[in-house]
Length: 409
Ligand SMILES: Cc1cc2nc3c(=O)[nH]c(=O)nc-3n(C[C@H](O)[C@H](O)[C@H](O)COP(=O)(O)OP(=O)(O)OC[C@H]3O[C@@H](n4cnc5c(N)ncnc54)[C@H](O)[C@@H]3O)c2cc1C
Ligand code: SF4
Ligand code: SF4
Image (cartoon, rainbow, N blue to C red; front, side, top):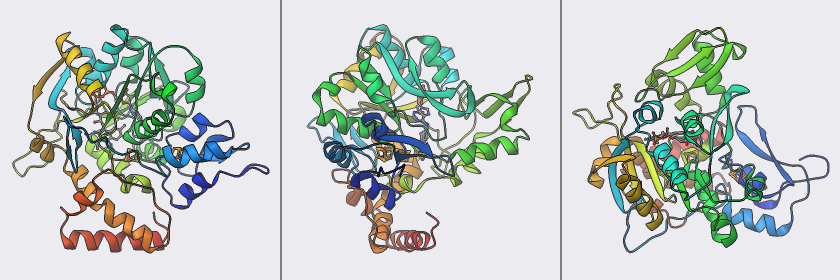
């Protein structure tokens, strides 16, 4: 609250449920709301002016902490309880070797974005990248060419609110390609459903499989572990420049310090996760037109091998627009792809499958604790829960309830 202003009821409920993902949509559509970082560096809304009742109603529908965008069932897309609606199921990589190397996995998203710019489908790409003025932070980026897209390639495992300047963005003319986390894309998808004039501005929405948004504190811990301070750092990336690549800081005096992906993501960042991510019913970008992920090679036990290799993305098209964009990109030679069976995703992404199985029990723990919960219809949450064992479910329920009771959520 600022002065006499209060958050609208939709968002007050979201904050009570601790289910804000930090997407920025609320600030992006309402001048009465601004984003501010909380103690751990996650973006959260605060009231800076009045918010009309119709905006409150829109947020109740579009905010991913209030209503999670449903998957669109479609005759030509099969809907898997873990992996969402699927038209094409492929692995692939950008044929531009620099892009493939710099990107997070195989550079599929950056290649698709560049192709959309080159063919005139869009005039710019709205996404995020390293903040050049504060390299440990992540800022909104508007890319119009190869250099921009290349600079923003790679995952930023930190808070990012790509929708926070949406209305300003829409004041500029031209169609826009949006790349964001599944919750970011879901928020935009719901807004587009509510307002066809906004839908007309976004011909393509791209996303990726998303384990979680770690706190900004997680990044600070990596920097400290590398023996550096914030002031030392001139640039910082979490991965890429290889697959998976290393978390690497370059200092102002030209030194390089880095950490492996298992040490940065596995030992630090994955322990710094917000609650909304633990109950995420669509962390696989099922609401996007196309979603990409790491097409990890599996070991003999069926678990992902994280050894350095040439980048390879899992690519799932979800909609007719996504399938068409992918077909054009492959025909024009910017992406090389190989079809795979949907069952092959299981060994590439086991932790996504486990989280989806446990969403229902974690949300049930919120209900037991008397908390509000985000609406999650049309996302196969119960179908996924039925794949969990009884012991797994009960452990998850009891563990989540205890965390909530102890305030560790
Ligand atoms: C928070 C987070 C969690 C992830 N969790 C998983 C996971 O569970 N499983 C998995 O397979 N892969 C995960 N990834 C990585 C993801 O796999 C790759 O981005 C994906 O494989 C696409 O690779 P690419 O080479 O096509 O992407 P690139 O060509 O490198 O493009 C990546 C795009 O993502 C955008 N981006 C980067 N960070 C963010 C962010 N924080 N918020 C919004 N947009 C961002 C960039 O602007 C860029 O446009 C995660 C990435 C992030 C950022
Ligand atoms: S999830 Fe997004 S729209 Fe909802 S309160 Fe958080 S920042 Fe705002
Ligand atoms: S796990 Fe879900 S809620 Fe969390 S950042 Fe990813 S898409 Fe958003």
